[in-house]
Image 1: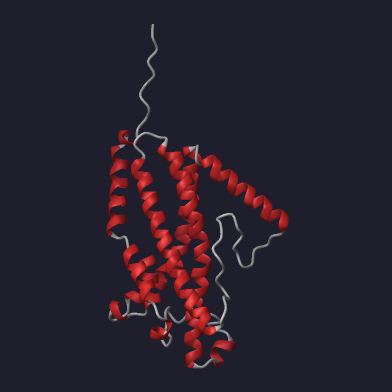
Image 2 (image 1 turned 135 degrees about the vertical axis):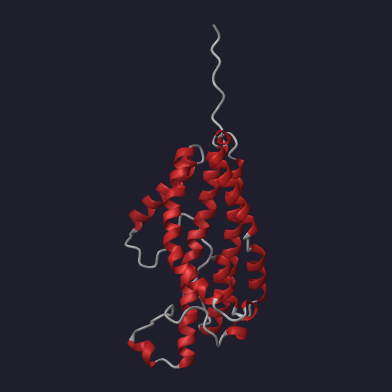
Length: 241
C-alpha cells in the first residue's frame, strides 16, 4: 500500500481571510502616497515655509515650559518645526528596521502555499518606507543646516541593528547582545513562518502606538483650508499617516 501525503495547506483554503488580505492590499495600493511624498520632498524649500507652524502648537519643543512662555512668536514657530525634525528623525530608524524585517518575514512566508499576496503587500510597504525616509531626511537636513549649520537630531543612515534611542539605558555588552538577537531573529524568521508572524504582531502593536501621535500630526494638515498651500512638512505628515 502506497502512502500518499495530503496536499499542503494553502491560504486559498481560507477564502474569508484571503478576501480580507486582498482588500487590504487593494486599499494600500489605492492610498499609496509614494509619488506625492517624493514630489513634496523634491519641491521642499525651507525659506518657503519657515514662518509657518508645521504641527499643532502643542507639538512643539519645550511647549508649556517657562522657556516656551518667554519665547517670541518666531522662536515658537522654530520650536514647532524642530519637533517635526526630532520626531521624524526617530521614525527613520524604525522604518529602516521595518524594511529589513519585512523582507526576512516575506522569505519565511513565501515558503507557504499561495502567500504571494502577503509578500506583495510587504514589498509595497517597503517601497513606501523608503519614500518616507527620503522625505524626512531631505526636510530635516535643510532645516538643521539653516538653523544650526550642522545636524542636531538627524544622523547618517544606519543598519537596522544599530541602537537609535536617544535615552537608551545601555552599555557595550547590551548593544552587542541586542545586535546578536536581531541578527538571529532575521536569520530564523526567514525560514520560519511562525516567527515571521510574531514579528507582525509586535510591529502591529508598535504601529498602533505610533499612530496615536501621527494622527494628530496629520490632522493639522487636514484642517488647513487648502491642502495644496499647506506647508510641505505638514503635508508629508498627512501622506505618511
